[in-house]
Length: 335
Image (cartoon, one colour):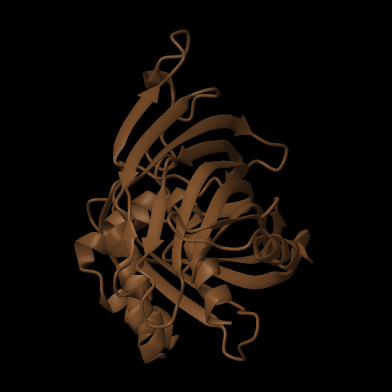
């Protein structure tokens, strides 16, 4: 069970980092025939106290490829044993559908400053399979008229999430929100010219992010803590493109989003009774759309993502190599 939980953790990291709109080095391009001066940036004009509630549904599916079983270099393992392990590991390794997960997202305009900056309070409630208590997360951010987030804080009632957030400084939280798209990068302050493109690239250092996540898990199980102590990750480079698609029939500003990332690697040293594990990301692709009300608050959203990766585990004298594909669809609809 611990191995399964750890595998899920390793697989989820790149998806979290890819997010909706990662950004550290933004580059905007607008068609020459429609200069930026013709467009007006989207701003949050909703009165203080205005709240939007979105119903979120997450559907996931994992497909396993052909499992390869080989001997550790320099060690002798009978061919019959390798074949038997390959058959055992391949049994039932087809396609797995994860039950849909339901959640709620609340976005509230908490305050407005004299310079036009708006304080947004975002609250998430997410069910967790196998647990009675849901995951809660609250994020407070101040958004300048230009769209830049000037301050950000997060907190949670969930023990694991609370422990994870304790490992971040305020600046690291702001960076993580930017890299994961939680601060609406590429939306606010950009010219509302149909066809305007905002391309963002980021090199995300997941070492600190994953260390903070693992602190929360380790606090619940000393054996897992020993296994996770030597985790190592490589930087993850992401590219995301946000395109303004105009106003739809419902009067909402619509955006299309696409992104990709690859070249990521995460490994564990194999301590604490856990096998040595390595996860190599082959490709992550995301696509979707989002809509915003005229007052700047979010509306319907949908996002599809596909991750191709290879998980390698060493168990005694044998190396298991398992290619996987994980797909996920997230939809958000106003209540």
